[in-house]
Image (cartoon, rainbow, N blue to C red; front, side, top):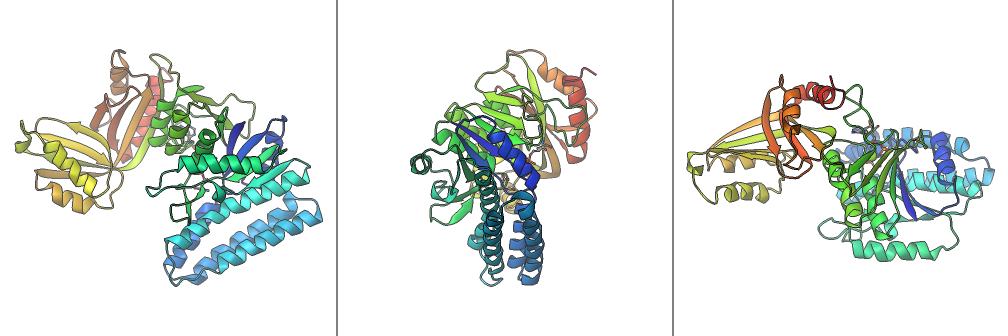
Length: 440
Ligand code: ADP
Ligand code: ASP
Ligand code: MG
């Protein structure tokens, strides 16, 4: 069986939902289909929670009312039979009164997580109802019955494997199984989620759990592009990527895929295919464990990075210096993205600046500290085994006119990263595109 995930854009209107249903029933194969909330919905739910945190119930109600009106209008566009319209209308009424019932008093993360879960609960109910109306043997499997995270907020693969199998077996003779992306229960059995964009992760975890033949991520673009299509002209889809290449690209900003999504598929060696809902026959991008020798595949960028440099004469020949530095970051649960060292100093980059002041204060015990904010990691991804010649100089050539703060290479066989100013991001991506992919 294949696992197919459709993102918010793919289920963003009644027409899009119908298109998805046509697509998943075009052959007679059984499928497990993971859906996101309709596009924009999770943002609205976040907004509602923010109003309630801020004690502004009227603000929250305003967003709820707008969302309610939007959803009610979708009902007659999606369903033709009166009884089905009534069924979904009733479901929506219950959901929106539930949203309205949250109080601004004692509003905690627990309530926020429940609110955030409603988008996927609604979209999957609507799509399942439409499929049934069309006479498809479809059923809704509640993700909250089997998607579970452990005390470290990591997927509990044993639980998921056992309970997803049970859920599938509980409804034999079905062709289409629909479930919610993004949402789960945590170790306390409370409603939780896999972080924004986490429906991709759901699909990959479920693909691994049910040993799927393939995990398909369907979105609004023809596969992973060799550069960010939102920023750079003339990007092209990359037809094939190694798991590691895709993981680097996702982590460093290629938003088409959630960064956590590759790991479960890779561990279970299940190919991932990125496909386009608007152009279902386009080849998309296949991600598996084969690499293409000597090829530079793509470029991605991650913004809002902070660089921290510690210069210390005491570092000279000192062992244990890096350990002390890393312990500071560890104690503030802040992970480091890039790191470069010299005999007198070390530079690191972080994207989480929640504890920056405390970290800098502690690092000052070990030397002079400088901080550069609003930086951007530019990551060039491909087969970059060190014996391969020339790719470093081509990438550096492309960046000849751009000040580079750090360069990192050798950490993996698949990437070389540059730290530049955030304001140079667009130029850096465009120059790399021109030199690496468009022979300009
Ligand atoms: P969905 O709602 O389907 O999950 P997203 O908005 O999360 O869709 O992600 C898809 C978007 O990611 C695309 O519309 C595209 O603009 C953007 N994107 C960013 N970088 C890349 C890339 N390297 N290749 C393809 N798409 C990318
Ligand atoms: N709906 C969630 C979000 O917008 C999860 C997802 O779409 O992947 O973040
Ligand atoms: Mg997404």
